[in-house]
Image 1 (spheres, rainbow, N blue to C red):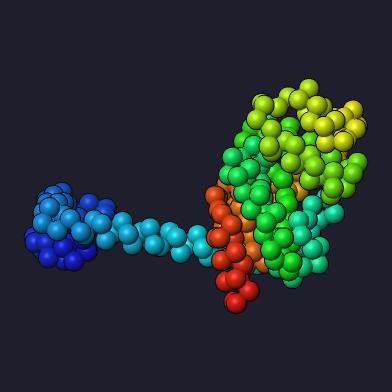
Image 2: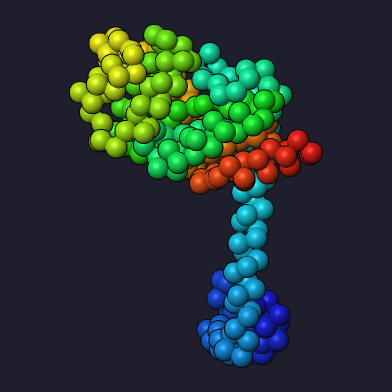
Length: 245
């Protein structure tokens, strides 16, 4: 447009507006652009592609910066985190998950298989509630289970609520807790307590710090992120890429 403006008649410059173009110049520019788009529509396609590429590059840069800034928190599990696999494995995969997320539920067997097949991978589980009140209730239940039985109780309750097809309420949580061999009364009381609130708040703050956009989100050695649905093969392939730099 600047080039077109330079070619505009000099006699009209005296009547230019604050933007540097007269109404006649603006009309001429618009006509030339419209004609160019009609003649070669790929101009618009190329422009959109360039904009998208720029936005993706900016987002990747922002993600890298966030991972660097939060590396310590991502690589050192919190006392309230549950860990699948060997606690001292060299590869750390952090999963942010919502118990009500269908993709998080679908990937559960793949995570068990992953740590079984690869003894040098640990998966740090960070439960978050992003899908509404039912998510909050089940996230509280999982976090509360750990308070009375550690990681074993955590995973029993996680399995119970994430394989259950009934919409959760307090009565349902009580039943699932009993079926998982937990003290249901204590679990419900702990769900409303400060320890569970602190755990979920810390997980949510870390998720926000790394710009989590959805669940599940997997972070590999605080270097690579996979957001959204993923399968076993993609998890394995990403681990291999990260290991090889």
